[in-house]
Length: 117
Image 1 (cartoon, helix red, strand yellow):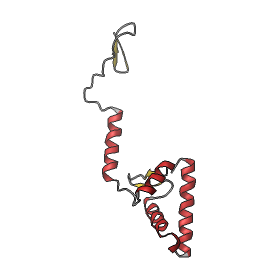
Image 2 (cartoon, one colour):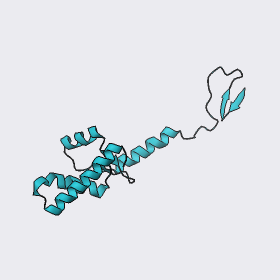
Image 3 (cartoon, helix red, strand yellow):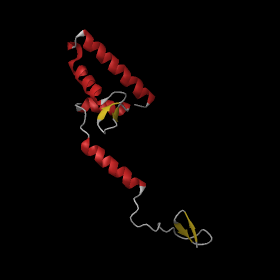
Image 4 (cartoon, helix red, strand yellow):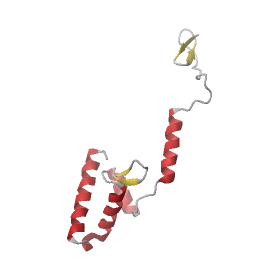
């Protein structure tokens, strides 16, 4: 029997693989699952209605920031909330708010097109 990277194998390469000798060693997926559970538990969704959420999801426009909070791709959490609010106001925005809405929207569209944040 040979040992390669902690896995015992019968001579000739046949047979079933044996687990490493450490019975409580965490698997890579366990760490990932634990991280995702932690992120989901602390993440508050953006204040989007179902239609807007579906539109952003289809376009790949939703992301998580480094703290695990939902945001729009290319924008911080705070900018995302601001963008959603400015979008809801629509034409009721003053000139400066409208320009801010355009700026945030452009950053979001570029980041979504690139597929990065």
